[in-house]
Image: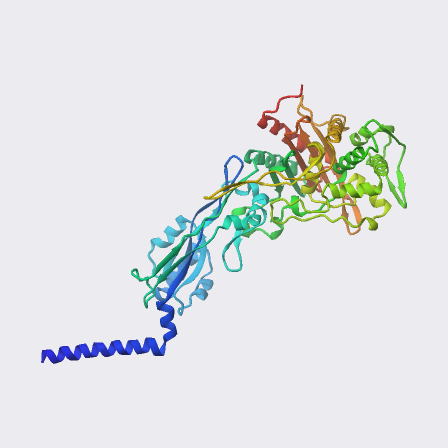
Length: 552
């Protein structure tokens, strides 16, 4: 009897096995192939870190978690939705709508920190799970917002850099994902004696910037003071090494919180120094003056009879204050920022040469700086220029360029005539190699001789300016103010200006060049009364920071 029962038991077991195999192999072969074949899992690399030139961290990664639900394990749906709604600050209705009981796994929210994860996990509510992730973290907050950019999500939900360095170097920073292939059983669990293939991810490359955090802090502090004092709509400061065009600082205000970028509109993300076009005004004058000296059309001591306005066709060009000094030198034209004097210089240089030098200064092309979102000015064909265009361009009106283009062109005047490519990344580091970014000479614009002459003229422009600035005593500084009216619908609005100052120090061997721009300052429209004082505050700070000795 026992033998028969045992036989019947084995027979039933075999029949169950046969039925199960029939069901798996005949009735649902696709499901079997899905369950028993290799499962692939993407392994995410760690995003590369970003440091300043002194290896102070500007962008790092920190642990975060993805909260997910397993609907089939949820025992109390009401309790779960109420709890998560409170902890994640999500509407209960939204959570309930996400819970699809036909699915095994549902992502709810990513990027929660360790403390929040412990709070949620502490109540041991079934059906809630966590997946460890890496989250971008900016130790200096918004100090370098427009320079760095931020990390958001693409259409597939993957981390992607946007704007600035994060956007331009996204591929380097992202690294290469790895892959884990594992054989699974019918319940989806790994078969440890089965196939297990793993390709480790390659972490992203680290970036060492040319930016100096201390210089960045100086620029932002002084810019913030200036915007509040002069009630400007916007302001930017760029500081660079004029010999290499390595960017030491880049700050624009208003900016945004890179850790909470999603709380700001897209208008905040654009970097005005490389994306916005503006008419530079009088800071453009030294470019034309240097070109005329280079072409031997004028000398610094040559004179011009400044008697009154100049008529060009139907247009009348005046000095900024409608005052005229009579016989003045070329240097004095820069000192008093005479528009009519610059028209004379332009006539001496000639229309063809004016156009050629605009191209030589690189004003019709992008600078090639390694920041995402660079815009380029457009220089219309010479055949489409009118006489008034050749006149107004000599004092920086009627031409629209980016602040970065202006800084690069001006730097060529004081570094021996070299038009350099601006850059913000000094080194790219990986586990395998270190790539050093070398300064790149684009072209020679003017001679060393002309460069020395224009530096002396710009020094005199600062020392003999009508405005009496609080300059650091004992130091020779060169520079030029700029005030440009803002074009609106085909005409200039006299109530709105872009005020600027560009300067460098020390004159003999410039350590830095800085451009300060205020958009529509309210207390005064003039660059001499807004941007220039900010520049000299920055210059005093940098002289101390760099330990620059007084001029002998």
